[in-house]
Image (tube, rainbow, N blue to C red):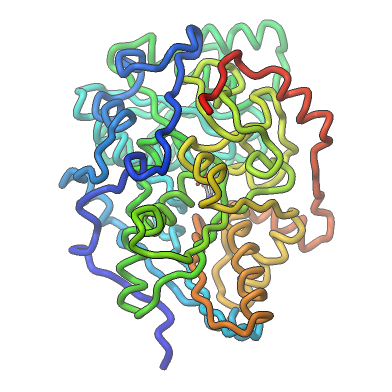
Length: 456
Ligand SMILES: *Cc1c(COP(=O)(O)O)cnc(C)c1O
């Protein structure tokens, strides 16, 4: 019998997170203070983020020890399984081996609890009793609500009003873990009240919700803010995905020729790929390819500019060096809400810019075609975000067939799709819309970047 999945035991949960920053071929340009545009210092984040998180955000250490308590809580569902998609391989008639690392087994249904638990741990270390954050479709908010419940922290989530109204089940999930969920804009913060006063019917946005969560956290000593993607500490925490996958592939006697995954802020794909990129960057391995897949509707890596920009629409967060479509760019309302971001994490963008990671953009119809094909061969019904990576993996498997090579493909399946049936419904009914932004809209948003030049 062919091995079709590799399981590890609790003792195999990594003991250290991997930080790629010291391995980058060129030093990363610093993050800048949102108002002064001077290099950001740890003191600028004091009171907003937990102290342990701030230290990691500026760390140059390659390996950072995972606290025992965090490892123990990872053990609720980790190590996550590595599967081989043999039935999909057969359907594609490819000599390639397609392995997928499945993060949909976490209680919140995605990879996001890997960082939510770490951030809640450091908040508890600070002695605070509340955490705030924003959420769009609700994946990050549910991961943080779950994590908060483990540490007895009160979690307050500002949920974009349109999602709050259209996607009640994620709200109920958050409330089940004890979180308080407010439709944003709300009457609870100065930022929310200002928007409500000007636009009583505002559907809200991630930018407004971030502003509310940040103002809430800064207004109280007993509260910290938590981030779902993009920042170094989040990518660091996600490295457990790739560290486990490396061990699992070793057991299967394989090493990937190509590592593929979907990229929004880039945290999940970084989590899977960076432990393998470590081998490439240190020269331990050559010839591995890395492919980041994004939606054509929000093509930051393939059509954006490499520049300094705000990661949030409200221009409140530190300015980051990244591929960006401009912080004012409004992506079309695709179902893969986790990939609707105008920028991506600085290390991922630097690796794309320097040619270590190849970015590609795919259409929504192709993405759902891949998701349904996967469901009908492998059984798993994945999140629309994850299906972008699987679309990329299928294309790699077809290229291997063309070349007649038994390549090993490793793909990140970041979450399950159990809350995304409306999206599948529209694909199956043939009403799923595809979007590609006009160049003029991207150019307009790019005309409004902060006045800070990247060192070249
Ligand atoms: C949030 C999310 C993503 C996108 O975020 P990254 O930081 O790019 O990983 C992808 N898949 C799922 C299931 C998510 O919840």
